[in-house]
Image 1 (cartoon, rainbow, N blue to C red):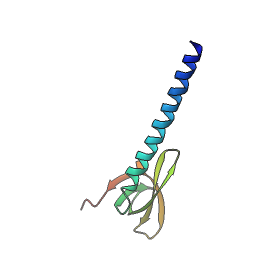
Image 2: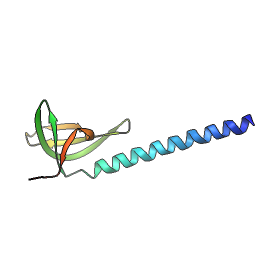
Image 3: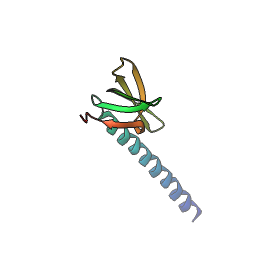
Image 4: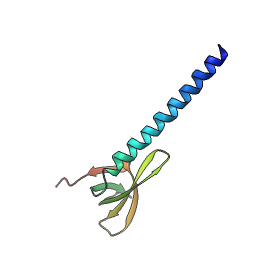
Length: 88
């Protein structure tokens, strides 16, 4: 009985690891869909706008590499975006 419980616990650990991996892939896939899109975000109380050029992944979180209209490149958390696309 103890061996069966150990096997079940190991199986659950493997399932959890697999689900985490799938979650990372989905996050990266969604973020990569923003490449080439115009995005806006707030930085130092200023609305910044730029074009997504790439995606960085760290700890299952996506950060976007954005070339802003000021000519600089910024790394922006996907959760910090306020606008995706052109709304005008």
